[in-house]
Amino acid sequence: MAKTFAGIGVLDLLHNGSVALYPGVAPNTLVKALTGVGFGLGALASDGIMGFCLVYDLFSLYLGQQGDWKMLLRAYTLGAAGIVGYRGFYT
Image 1 (spheres, one colour):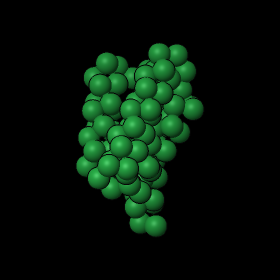
Image 2 (cartoon, one colour):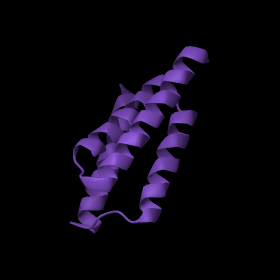
Image 3 (tube, helix red, strand yellow):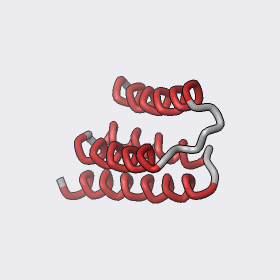
Image 4 (cartoon, rainbow, N blue to C red):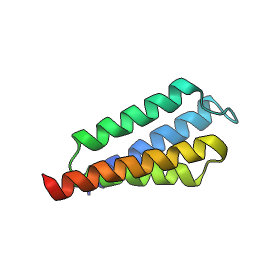
């Protein structure tokens, strides 16, 4: 239960922080790169439950975006899901 709430907390932190600090502003290249690296490392370092929560977070972000950022979030979601799935089956 605690890991699930922590995973949802990550989503709240990212979404609410970005909306509060940068309303209506598209993310720049640095933010896009750090999102991929951060979630990739998070998926590698976490257990299955927390990893699934991170995949859920990325999918939720993907659903609320548009354009290039949406397509990049889709790739990040699939990549993180692949990492979590691989770790779940082979470790």
